[in-house]
Image 1: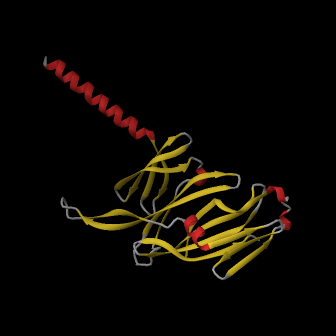
Image 2: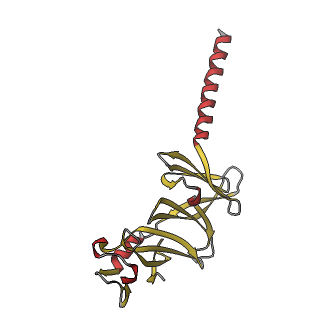
Image 3: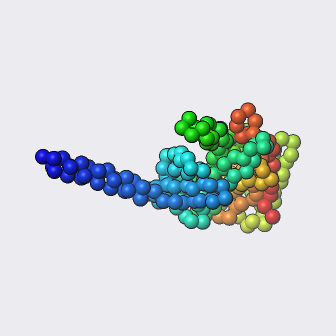
Length: 235
């Protein structure tokens, strides 16, 4: 009886261990920054990475609903800089959700850190807290007016109006969109310790890129919101 019990326990432990190994093997290391101390793991599902786990300086936190393309060219980007201008660095992770001809859809996540003291050894650990970022398309819709006709496109932001001659693009009128479209090209970058979003303006599906709406963010009222917005024509 004792031998049977020991055998059953051994089988159970083996099953649990096998399951744990299988679960670990489901995750792939998809991005890493030794300088920052961050490693990002995710599962591959239907051609995308999802169910993220982020290891930051010994701690692990989960983001099950994030997604990123599996293209190595567009692995998650890891940045650790003081973009809130408060003297403390923030963790910025930029994901790429969609890529293709005339398509680049990226998404930004920003984490501030709270210090917590461990009771066990009285050392301090950093607790990541994700901070909201105003959606760039929502900012654009509130602040930008556009017009598109057969020979020109115009972009108005406040009292500034930009006019683009689209005749050199050689796009036939029947191939023009009804209006300038900013939903396919959404990019983020950190420049001069500031978060910047760039939304590309397209007037046609056949090579009709005219320039970017550039949104510079600031940290205010516990979130990242618009500091300035401008249009940069394509040259």
